[in-house]
Image (cartoon, rainbow, N blue to C red; front, side, top):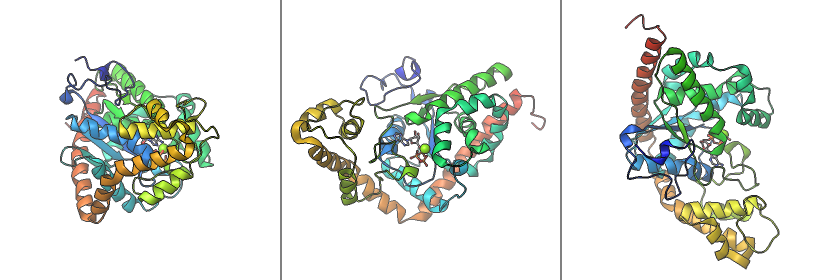
Length: 352
Ligand code: ATP
Ligand code: MG
């Protein structure tokens, strides 16, 4: 197969030539990805990863979405209102186009085989490798707590999720690249040591791999700098108006020297399928005010249907719980099979 998806560790799915739909054989791939239930989803999730999940699902690739509940306590002591957050995430996935009949959504804590898989994986990495991970370092710093063993080892946890569920394509934001690299290393080392079991997963980035929040830092639930998918149109417009830009009047697309302006242009570009540089030309001397008006309009228009669906879905929690139950039984079956293969490869299949 000649899909460009196979020839690069990172693929821009929004570029017309990056993913050759005609040559992609959906049966040859499996998407595995997920989010921490630390809060509702934001625009960074939507254009950084969620849109890619939906696109791949619609191409016929099986998609599994993990609600990574154990990862909530990597950088904090409290789990938060998990039951509600999990339901909210499910409603948001479905509203964005994830189809529960074709795709699998489950919560990590419901599938014990994934935790078990982490044990042999821990033996394949050194503590120095884990301490070098830049995303773990950044998250540890941001948490203002001492580094917990769970945060240090969470990339291994994540490798168990991806490999346990047979994922080879992982649509993520840029912060996840070190983790996907580690999952590749773990797959390689396991195969070298025990025989071929795992495919090496590949990260899929979009052209907006790190969407910035209204304060100019990476948009993130815990920073409180987000534009939530569930925000109202008015809230969205007010947040965009308060977003940091710069004092230059003429709008240009220059991600290096004008990151905040480039971020708004990239958001408009990603949501409307246009080149951000062309959007910049269109705004021109209208300055930051015109850019913000345009950005709010495009975001609100693009999310209108999603927001409507989201409200309807949230009104039916028992349906959302059913989606989770269904996804959990599918994930348990796949992860259980992988664990059997791992036990067999390691000579631990005494009972089969
Ligand atoms: P938290 O602050 O709790 O870590 P988060 O906003 O960083 O939350 P995660 O659940 O950690 O969200 O990330 C889920 C997925 O969304 C990951 O693939 C991550 O790379 C992607 N993602 C999160 N924020 C962004 C962003 N600002 N731009 C692009 N992708 C993002
Ligand atoms: Mg995060």
